[in-house]
Image (cartoon, rainbow, N blue to C red):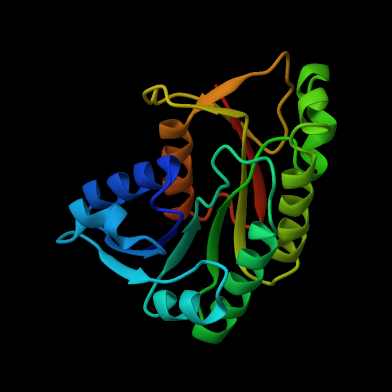
Length: 208
């Protein structure tokens, strides 16, 4: 599989890179900071560019079978339009280049997943994360109507814990308190979704 990963320098993205390399895939990474990927220099193709640039994304997308986005804002609670700009770039580039498969990492509580959230989660999502979640929802509305073979993935609160290898996945899941899931397990699902048709044009909520 020829796989383009966006957000590969982030903690979840790096887990996806490792899984793809272990499986023998041909991996391409679009990164603004290629120096952060120097240890992978002989294992991947690094395209220097910005995930919000139509031109840069299209250049990296040539020859790919699947695009997986693990873009995030790290500890920031401001989106600065990252997700809407990246979605527009990816959708436009995918149409130009002819790539249809997209797996996109979001967050539980965005869009209609908010309705399934617990009281504790809703309090966090509607205050601290309000700005970033609003931008994510706009980006995902664009993806849903793009005509691409998309999968939107909604993990609960991310941790740095090692992968368990087992987790709960469904289009909707009941929530209590503020459940978590490790970035390593989220990467495992993102990668499996990229290799399968099971979750095409579906949303996946994922938690421990």
